[in-house]
Image (cartoon, rainbow, N blue to C red; front, side):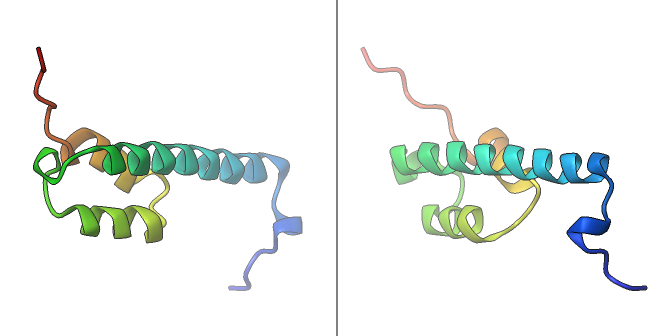
Length: 79
């Protein structure tokens, strides 16, 4: 099976690919910013591993979403 080129894709397929990439980039930026602002005690697992995974792994938004839902511990309320 030959690889499809970008020019061979339908406008709908191109739109879906661009949309998924935009969502992934937004979630990844949010997750990395959140991770950088947290102490290591507020993160489930090692921060360097999360940082590396979020920065390198292309997961169509699944890894950042997993971090945002399960990788963070609730922050203690100050006051």
